Image (cartoon, rainbow, N blue to C red; front, top):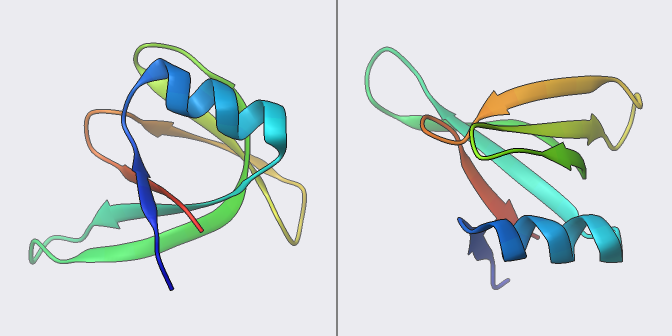
Length: 72
């Protein structure tokens, strides 16, 4: 399965517009990245991305500086 990292505004814009499923990864205290959530880009700024959870519909904000975002 091929994944594509989202890093630029145009990536988030395209993902939001197309309704692409996104995987969010965050670093744990040991420095290992773990998948935090899967969902859809609901909104983005230069600092944060708001993801709408694919299962629950709840919205969570993630920092673009600390989280990694991948298109599934």
